[in-house]
Length: 235
Image 1 (cartoon, rainbow, N blue to C red):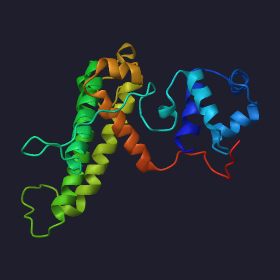
Image 2 (image 1 turned 120 degrees about the vertical axis):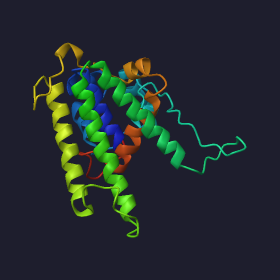
Image 3 (image 1 turned 90 degrees about the horizontal axis):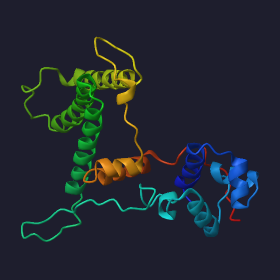
Image 4 (image 1 turned 90 degrees about the vertical axis):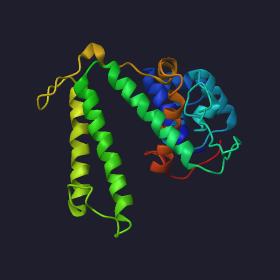
């Protein structure tokens, strides 16, 4: 199978507050076998994939990591175009740029929905630091590039930008958990967003597919999910 399947069937069960025993009974398998599937110790057959997809009301493609949306919607990412208007699918950078831009737009939309200017500011600080770090690396690749545009030296820049970003990230967590920190005003509990793939698609129809794609591609680069391992057997 793959690392997505064990993680997702475990997540779906826990999200619904169901026990392994009750789900196993509903699916006609033993609890021990379901536990092995959830841990990635054993692989199931395609008939079980269909059965558990129907049970949770999601698509098989979602369980297999082929789409980031539970309902199986494809993530629509525009391909680049040439000067004559024809598509040029071999050029990846524009598509990746669109994914990032629309995902960031979604982040800001969610932050704005919390009615907290402090939260939005901290999101900006974190993103500024991330972009700054990458730009400094690109800029420093050619040692002939003049350093006059920067106030902080190359040797200090990356560490300080990383620290600034981590502080902003910590502030974001505190504000969303209802804590005042460093003069920043916490987000009201009633303003904390209630999110799901379906709700994101409803609230941000022009942006959410890019965010789903970003999540999927980021997790692929992160490697297999924890908990999977050992010999796998087809049953």
